[in-house]
Image (cartoon, rainbow, N blue to C red; front, side):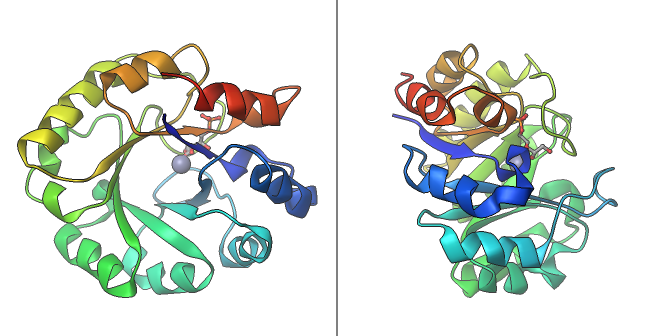
Length: 216
Ligand code: DX5
Ligand code: ZN
């Protein structure tokens, strides 16, 4: 069964408590929290105070996706704001190995996010050190974008890379995930599905999460 991580980016921010409580009562496994700085990506989402507000109500692990430059300056604060898993972008880190070990020293699960144009071979020398690869299936910055089809093949190649190195890293697919592409993603080797607009724009998010959870 896949791990389902609904993305808060598509939730109703004016009712964040009830949205988080809905996720608490759902079959969702993690809460995916998208942080955008208007520099690494061309959009600003929200930051630490909102993360802390989510933490007050969240009863599930907080999976924080940092789409920001210089993440090393902020990871400690995000850990304090409730992050259990933190992903930094490979493209934003000149010293990725150091960034990964900083996350581990903080006691977080260490994730590395990669943009659609980034070859998975760039993970080769860190794959054994990380807990999660957040593989972008859209260009990061906005919710509700169209899934990039090339991602199916990329998940397969990432699964091969992980297995070849005997790494325990989980594969998270992020962007444009829905009921139609979820089965092929699981089949290709994905462990975690992030879904924002597909969950929150649906008439019954609880039911939508439950249907994603039972994909196999
Ligand atoms: C994109 C974010 C995604 C996004 C997913 O920059 O990282 O997590 O919120 O949203 P959907 O599922 O709507 O593509
Ligand atoms: Zn994300």
